[in-house]
Image (tube, rainbow, N blue to C red; front, top):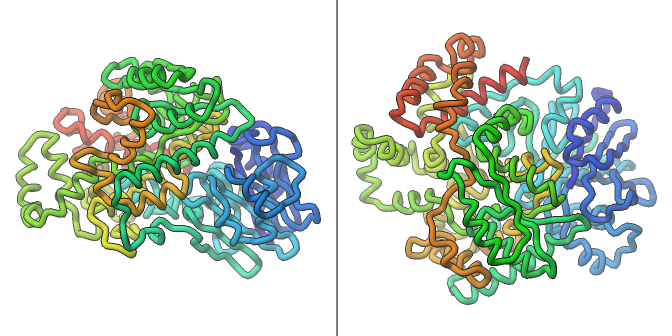
Length: 616
């Protein structure tokens, strides 16, 4: 696990000293070594966190034997040994980097079909002056770039790009990103909060040369939805169990101590159980517990750890300790990021780093196997009778309790094509499109366009399947994986995600919906696999989230953030939000009439705080 930075410029817009500073700004991604490569137009910096082949021979940027090709690589390609054998490659190191470099030299982008892993790769041909940037299929590893049509730079994190004086001096807000942040909790799948700073899309590669820039897709979830579904429970269970076993074994390859995040839920328990089964020694497992009992599920993780016989470490976190992490969010994520579960993710990463350098997580199970309440809502809204009555029901819900109003909000989607994002935003207590037009001043308003919100694929998807595919391509990639990457890298910890092995993803995309959501049981097939390792009675409890009591905190100890950032003078000075609408939200929140407002209040605070602190 590492961090990469680089530039491509023929106008001398960037300097070597800035490149070194950019690398140093993300030192926590790779604290053990910084390497630099440069020629007359390209510069590459690499920060290394040693996981595989701890020798200095595996340092990067790595240059080919003839000096023509250079690679700076963030992540892991787990099947590098198989590639070496199949390609009959002669190597000097035991690292996956050398395998990736030699395979790209021989096959260029065709090599991507071989790679099973998480990666952001910069591959440079110094003879042809061509730079290739590649991002893994599911977007586990981040890759940002700056492009104004003339000058180009890239990095694992935005903060590194801002070390270049040319970029920092010209930074400004991308208005559309504020709209999407308010609706979904993150700034975009391609855009960021800054103009001219973008993300290389998941499953894509970017080609840059003196002739210009082009981005191409090499893998897509949409392209892997097939005509027919896999319907047989028993065969599906066998296949899934084998795929999970193989994926976990791949991700246990490490030359440093490792473990798993264990929350006690279905996904992390399965990953932990399979990992422990494949080890002869005790696996390290890590859980945090909140002192406030309502948010403490650590006893469930403890029970599972005891059953599996892991070396379990648990840390009890007080409200004060957790809330002290709040001011670090913007520095960690570089732009507004609404998911407050970043706080416990940072804390469990900090805990894990005391005993491990790499951990496995259970991310992806909910999206692949329908673990969210949103899929039940999508299923209900397929009912034609409910659809005919949904607006009268919505209007009637305005007279009900906070919970009734929240349920009613889901019904008020603006159109069928916008239903998935609307269901998501209301399930997460975020702003609807209609609300965004009320809260933003006209200058900042723009239409939210989300490609493939209703998927155009080979077979007709049910509303639940479509909702899950939407979450996979938006929420999972742009929220959950971003959260885990930044939170873990803050403590120089590598996190691998076995359930997002592309073979598992492609299999799950074509499972019959009834094998995922079966007679009201969510993640049915995944549970059946899990119960071969851990007794089912340990999971007889409702699903809870990896969350903090943000609503309670904003009412009490963190109310000063509302006072500091949502007061009239600052709202008017920043000039993004309609103060009257903000004031009405704060008054309703303070009255306790609608606690679902807490996430919306939190979003406004983050935008205000970002503009005040980062765009001075």
